[in-house]
Image (cartoon, rainbow, N blue to C red; front, side, top):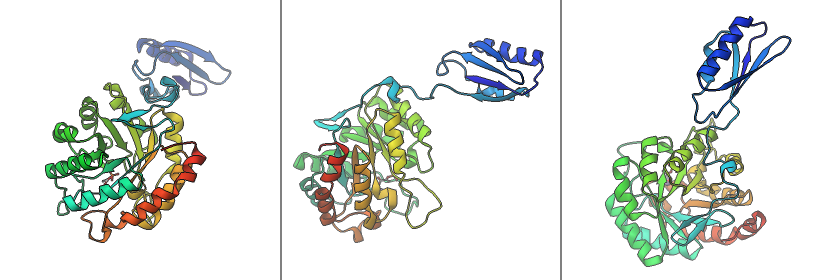
Length: 338
Ligand code: PEP
Ligand code: MN
């Protein structure tokens, strides 16, 4: 930490800050300039008391943090890229993954038809919400346990791995019993008790970015999972809320590039929630792949016009087949294989 004192702060006030730094467990190294003094406080910022509170001294101008607030998710702690093995499907470190399926699991026929089609188009992981976080309590909330049963059935028939959202701590145990990957949604992105409970299952976790979550906060949410002893985290950019109204959210591809620079974890993109428009999904996928995303999670429905949730943003089966066929040159450019 660096503490910058106000110009002309009297010596006894500087000494008071130095004394406080020592009291809080740091080794204070003052540098007295002609106008201003700065104090370098040597110590481990992640284990010691934070010195940011020293801002309350009127003679302190600013306190600067040197170390990052996250440790385990950072590239410094883990050179190279993490590869997550989901029962034989590798994600990260050059292994690209295509996840696809309906926003919500609606019926056996809808799920099976979608599962067979997305598999034929190259997906290896089937998405489908059994528990749905809906803005209105009057909208379709998901089939719950029946949805999980259908997902298991689809896995059995197709061999696809399953990703599904866990909405609450109470559901963690039984959702984890069915899922290969637990999805933590944007609305729960900083529900820390849920993150900890999900982490404890040892399952791979896809952590969406919250709608107004800063990149640092997103990485710190992932840190909760790693700190619990579960390193199997996949970060997922799904758009943030901005002033723009032509898209449902603003897909922040810069955040994908930054998350990949900062962290060793795989980072994937959800263009469906990211823009909320089926007509933009494929072009956003191509962009995401070209810039180095480790995977895509795409909403696909046999008949989007009749979908019980998010119909406007779901690709139909033919649209997804075209997507599956057109991404290879972009994967090659990014140096990834699938
Ligand atoms: C979803 O994947 O259908 C979903 C609700 O995602 P998000 O949490 O990103 O809104
Ligand atoms: Mn959705």
